[in-house]
Length: 584
Ligand code: GLU
Image (cartoon, rainbow, N blue to C red; front, side, top):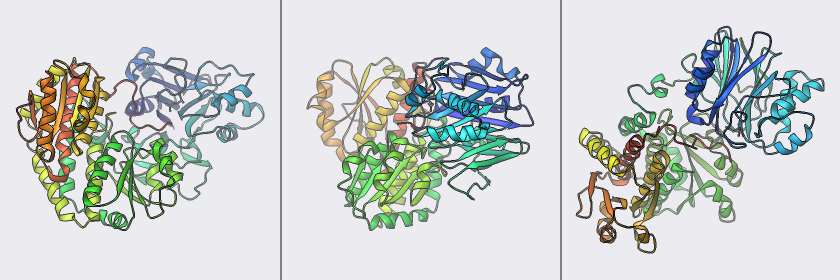
């Protein structure tokens, strides 16, 4: 995954692509680079490893002026994080520049055939400018050469190319998202809408198989498998959605936003869930698919379905092939994805092509939202923090609502949601922040921590441990309390912290397990409705029926956030991660 943007227009393109690429930094931040059309019909490239702002300053890029440019923020798949491997990559003549999102599976074979070309990087991407150069050498126009190159690469790849000798910027989509932004006297192409939203909300979503040329006055479709579908439309993103506002980090902004999102959901008319829930009601079995935090959503939902008496299972997409002999046509699939582009799920789609699919997705236009029969918008707004927070909570609530609706328990579900809404007023208060900040300071130097729970509390523990790993780098392991004494207890010694998530349902049994930890002088931070003797630190998490996991998760998110700050880590950009995993 990476971020791509290109712009050509009457005004200076440089500030537009720089601003846009900064908005795309959540998609990858190993290195940054841009290419622009220079004065003497040259292609000028500025790129380096590190954060975008530092590189812009290093090269004084803001002083440049050009009518067309492209930029890239990388999440390395092939080749180390080095200046040479940063995008844009050039052909031998230095006249063709390419930025790329994805993996070219046959790059080695293509590279071997381009023996007269000089390669300077270890990336798969670099075959693209050389392929285009080769096609031009053999007599093709830039446009035809890009189409020919696109036809030769295998795997999922989207890329944007520019040539010193062409006024147009070319965009090829296959897999990763690309969208056009249409402005008076100028056109954007980018990985997402918020990157250019300040300048236009008139967009055209591209389809897989598209080859598009953008120029100052709009765009030209050079090749498509979806004729007639490239309609310009206005999108209703709020700018406040993509800016930090008064918050220091997107992660804190997005954690805080959960209260408002849950309130609005509790007040809204949920009848739009009826169609999907009636499909579930007549299905034989429910499979819920997700990766990372979305897999935890799937586990919570599967637990609830089974509690209600429905056969249901959470499966990670890469394991789905394992079930291929068991899947019947009457089985229904619920796909949970924040980005709608999760490559592992996209790849698993052929296995379930005859099954009905419901998508719980936070992006209206995406590969997965287009592939499902029923699309349910998570409606959490743009999430820029790399660690999923509000999208986790909102998608988990939606799947649980769906489960309840499919069993005719709408009233009970809505009551629980209203209870949750009320409870959250007691969570986002100074006294809770105070204890969370104090606890963060106490645990910031830990090397290992355990997250304990049973049933849904264990799943909440898995998500809590993932948050802690992602933004603090502390080794955090979720363990089902019931299994702790079957081995992991050996790891507990004096002062080792465990975070125990304890809801009413499992309290008595949990207390026994926690006593075993205390007996080994371990320390316990308890997230529960009442203070238990075994807790060294107690943070209240009020129950809310089927949504009791929500306060537990919000507290864990805040804890991870403040530990991250205490360790001087930028929680919006933890090392090695990117927001959506659009590569295999
Ligand atoms: N495969 C390319 C690289 O490693 C692009 C990766 C990406 O999508 O960021 O440079």
